[in-house]
Amino acid sequence: MQSAEVTNMEEYAKGDTYALTKDYERSRVYYFFKRSMDIIFSALGIIFMSPVMIFTIIAIKLDSKGSAIFSQKRIGKGGQVFKMYKFRSMVVDAEDLLYKLKSKNEMSGPMFKMKEDPRITGVGRFIRKTSIDELPQLFNVLKGEMSLVGPRPNLPREVVKFNDWQKQKLLVKPGLTCYWQVMGRSDIGFEEWMKLDIKYIKERNTLLDLKLIFKTFFVLFGDEHAR
Image (tube, rainbow, N blue to C red; front, top):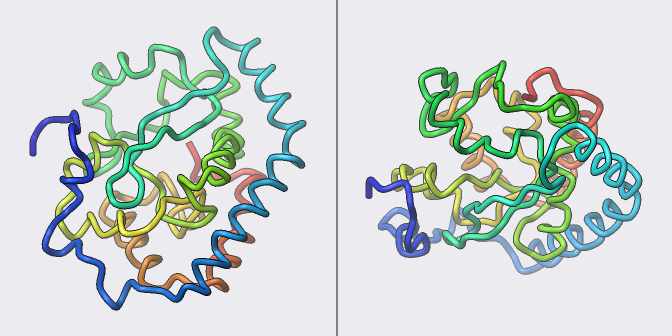
């Protein structure tokens, strides 16, 4: 499939090597505790971080025109499409400008990243550095579209280029944080990112989830790899 537009992502996500195997299965107890943590921690996060979120909304509105909340189609478990929420960190016409910047891409694979991205606003640089821009995804977690811990969700135009091995990351719900989020983020190449996601899927358990949640708190105070 060559088109960047995905008309039926669930069908695309199916493949011979995509079938759920014993290696990836987990007990019902694990899933119960994982969903319980998602509900409790996301609800508490929304409550305690609400002053920060309100302040961020005001700062974004004062800094640049456009909505403070940005929603974008992402691919979740089983290839299901959902809208992921973020605080807007770029100018409103960022998607249109992307095509003019393709030649400056610094990320391998289907991803796009560049250190001095001109589309990012003044406030946007700060909220990206502190990961505040990701806070609205707590609502995605509460709704059950995402989990606190899991592979970061990709765009449809990225997933459509996945091979069967890379499609394995669609076996689980995407998350707010995972190995990639706490081990280098933008400084990690696409292939290594995919390996880390599948490593998590194979190793995931309640203790690992708690460890990754704990490590993520340090990212909120500034991550040299975030951009």
